[in-house]
Picture (tube, rainbow, N blue to C red):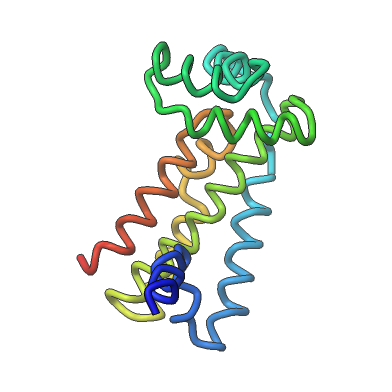
Length: 165
Protein backbone atom coordinates (compact mmCIF):
# COMPACT_ATOMS: atom_id res chain seq x y z
CA UNK A 1 0.00 0.00 0.00
CA UNK A 2 2.72 2.42 0.97
CA UNK A 3 4.74 1.61 -2.16
CA UNK A 4 1.70 2.24 -4.37
CA UNK A 5 1.28 5.69 -2.82
CA UNK A 6 4.95 6.43 -3.43
CA UNK A 7 4.69 5.43 -7.09
CA UNK A 8 1.51 7.50 -7.41
CA UNK A 9 3.37 10.56 -6.13
CA UNK A 10 6.29 9.94 -8.53
CA UNK A 11 4.14 10.61 -11.60
CA UNK A 12 5.87 13.93 -12.30
CA UNK A 13 4.12 14.56 -15.59
CA UNK A 14 0.70 13.64 -14.16
CA UNK A 15 -0.21 11.87 -17.39
CA UNK A 16 -3.02 9.84 -15.81
CA UNK A 17 -5.25 12.93 -15.71
CA UNK A 18 -5.11 13.47 -19.47
CA UNK A 19 -8.25 12.81 -21.47
CA UNK A 20 -7.82 10.63 -24.59
CA UNK A 21 -8.68 13.54 -26.87
CA UNK A 22 -5.84 15.59 -25.38
CA UNK A 23 -3.09 13.14 -26.33
CA UNK A 24 -3.00 14.00 -30.06
CA UNK A 25 -3.27 17.69 -29.19
CA UNK A 26 -0.31 17.48 -26.83
CA UNK A 27 1.78 15.40 -29.22
CA UNK A 28 1.13 17.98 -31.93
CA UNK A 29 2.01 20.86 -29.60
CA UNK A 30 5.22 19.17 -28.43
CA UNK A 31 6.29 18.37 -31.99
CA UNK A 32 5.53 21.93 -33.06
CA UNK A 33 7.54 23.30 -30.12
CA UNK A 34 10.46 21.00 -30.85
CA UNK A 35 10.43 21.86 -34.55
CA UNK A 36 10.20 25.61 -33.88
CA UNK A 37 13.10 25.44 -31.44
CA UNK A 38 15.19 23.47 -33.92
CA UNK A 39 14.80 26.21 -36.54
CA UNK A 40 18.06 28.11 -36.45
CA UNK A 41 19.37 26.59 -33.23
CA UNK A 42 22.84 26.46 -34.77
CA UNK A 43 22.75 29.94 -36.32
CA UNK A 44 25.53 31.24 -34.11
CA UNK A 45 28.75 29.97 -32.64
CA UNK A 46 29.01 29.25 -28.94
CA UNK A 47 29.29 32.11 -26.51
CA UNK A 48 31.69 32.39 -23.59
CA UNK A 49 29.17 31.31 -20.96
CA UNK A 50 28.26 28.27 -23.09
CA UNK A 51 31.95 27.38 -23.32
CA UNK A 52 32.16 27.71 -19.54
CA UNK A 53 29.28 25.25 -19.15
CA UNK A 54 30.97 22.83 -21.53
CA UNK A 55 34.25 23.18 -19.63
CA UNK A 56 32.57 22.34 -16.33
CA UNK A 57 30.58 19.48 -17.83
CA UNK A 58 33.56 17.87 -19.54
CA UNK A 59 35.50 17.20 -16.35
CA UNK A 60 36.66 13.62 -16.07
CA UNK A 61 34.32 12.62 -13.23
CA UNK A 62 30.69 13.63 -12.51
CA UNK A 63 31.53 14.41 -8.86
CA UNK A 64 34.04 17.00 -10.02
CA UNK A 65 31.45 18.49 -12.36
CA UNK A 66 28.88 18.92 -9.59
CA UNK A 67 31.42 20.09 -7.03
CA UNK A 68 33.05 22.66 -9.30
CA UNK A 69 29.69 23.92 -10.51
CA UNK A 70 28.30 24.31 -6.99
CA UNK A 71 31.46 25.92 -5.60
CA UNK A 72 32.55 28.22 -8.41
CA UNK A 73 29.54 28.75 -10.62
CA UNK A 74 26.44 30.82 -9.99
CA UNK A 75 24.05 27.99 -10.87
CA UNK A 76 23.41 24.57 -9.32
CA UNK A 77 25.18 21.67 -10.98
CA UNK A 78 22.19 19.73 -12.29
CA UNK A 79 22.38 21.12 -15.83
CA UNK A 80 26.13 20.55 -16.02
CA UNK A 81 25.59 16.99 -14.78
CA UNK A 82 23.03 16.40 -17.54
CA UNK A 83 25.46 17.87 -20.09
CA UNK A 84 28.19 15.62 -18.67
CA UNK A 85 26.02 12.49 -19.06
CA UNK A 86 24.81 13.40 -22.55
CA UNK A 87 28.33 14.40 -23.57
CA UNK A 88 29.74 11.06 -22.44
CA UNK A 89 26.97 9.32 -24.38
CA UNK A 90 26.98 11.20 -27.72
CA UNK A 91 30.02 13.48 -27.50
CA UNK A 92 30.50 17.13 -26.63
CA UNK A 93 29.62 18.53 -30.05
CA UNK A 94 27.62 21.73 -29.80
CA UNK A 95 24.94 20.35 -32.14
CA UNK A 96 24.15 17.57 -29.68
CA UNK A 97 24.56 19.45 -26.42
CA UNK A 98 22.23 22.28 -27.48
CA UNK A 99 19.50 19.68 -27.97
CA UNK A 100 19.29 19.36 -24.17
CA UNK A 101 17.95 22.90 -23.88
CA UNK A 102 15.73 22.37 -26.92
CA UNK A 103 14.24 19.31 -25.21
CA UNK A 104 13.57 21.05 -21.87
CA UNK A 105 12.14 24.12 -23.56
CA UNK A 106 9.82 21.93 -25.64
CA UNK A 107 8.77 19.97 -22.56
CA UNK A 108 7.84 23.26 -20.89
CA UNK A 109 5.05 23.57 -23.44
CA UNK A 110 3.35 20.59 -21.81
CA UNK A 111 3.49 22.20 -18.38
CA UNK A 112 2.09 25.47 -19.71
CA UNK A 113 -0.79 23.53 -21.27
CA UNK A 114 -1.48 21.53 -18.11
CA UNK A 115 -1.45 24.52 -15.76
CA UNK A 116 -3.71 26.66 -17.93
CA UNK A 117 -6.02 23.74 -18.72
CA UNK A 118 -6.45 22.90 -15.05
CA UNK A 119 -7.10 26.51 -14.07
CA UNK A 120 -9.02 27.97 -17.01
CA UNK A 121 -10.05 25.14 -19.36
CA UNK A 122 -8.78 23.33 -22.43
CA UNK A 123 -9.07 26.32 -24.78
CA UNK A 124 -6.93 28.49 -22.48
CA UNK A 125 -4.34 25.72 -22.24
CA UNK A 126 -4.24 25.39 -26.01
CA UNK A 127 -3.92 29.13 -26.66
CA UNK A 128 -1.39 29.62 -23.85
CA UNK A 129 0.82 26.79 -25.04
CA UNK A 130 0.73 28.03 -28.64
CA UNK A 131 1.75 31.49 -27.43
CA UNK A 132 4.52 29.90 -25.37
CA UNK A 133 5.76 27.91 -28.37
CA UNK A 134 6.32 31.12 -30.35
CA UNK A 135 7.45 33.29 -27.44
CA UNK A 136 10.82 34.87 -28.16
CA UNK A 137 12.51 34.20 -24.81
CA UNK A 138 11.63 30.53 -24.64
CA UNK A 139 12.94 30.03 -28.17
CA UNK A 140 16.19 31.92 -27.56
CA UNK A 141 16.83 30.18 -24.25
CA UNK A 142 16.38 26.86 -26.07
CA UNK A 143 19.36 27.77 -28.24
CA UNK A 144 21.82 28.20 -25.38
CA UNK A 145 23.95 25.67 -23.55
CA UNK A 146 22.92 27.10 -20.21
CA UNK A 147 20.43 26.07 -17.58
CA UNK A 148 17.73 28.59 -18.57
CA UNK A 149 15.45 26.10 -20.33
CA UNK A 150 15.83 23.56 -17.50
CA UNK A 151 15.04 26.23 -14.92
CA UNK A 152 11.99 27.35 -16.89
CA UNK A 153 10.81 23.76 -17.18
CA UNK A 154 11.11 23.20 -13.42
CA UNK A 155 9.39 26.49 -12.60
CA UNK A 156 6.49 25.69 -14.92
CA UNK A 157 6.25 22.19 -13.46
CA UNK A 158 6.10 23.63 -9.93
CA UNK A 159 3.66 26.31 -11.04
CA UNK A 160 1.38 23.68 -12.54
CA UNK A 161 1.51 21.53 -9.40
CA UNK A 162 0.98 24.38 -6.95
CA UNK A 163 -2.74 23.84 -6.81
CA UNK A 164 -4.10 26.85 -8.63
CA UNK A 165 -3.51 30.43 -9.58
